[in-house]
Length: 86
Image 1: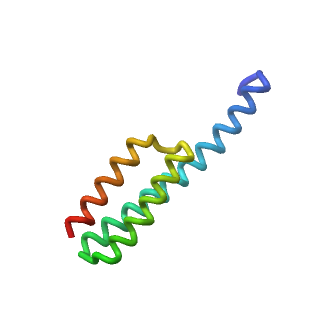
Image 2: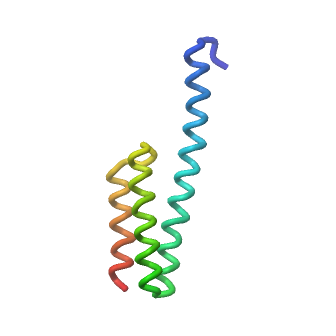
Image 3: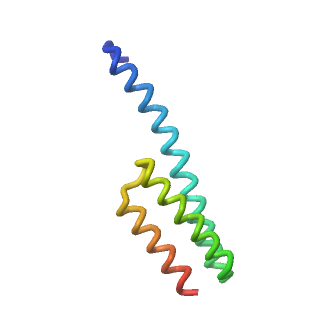
């Protein structure tokens, strides 16, 4: 454990941020998985709805600093390609 007071505070805030980031990443994985399962079942309406939800969650993750904007753009592009191929 650190001796410096400000470093003790940083350790606590970093842990909170880590837990929050992991929760956001888990939600993203679930949303993208929902898109993929809808694509596999060739359900165009469900895939489009899931794509919309996943896109919003990706944008939110970027605004919160969990993902880099290019990473989110690449993921959105990949899932939208799958949906548009239906």
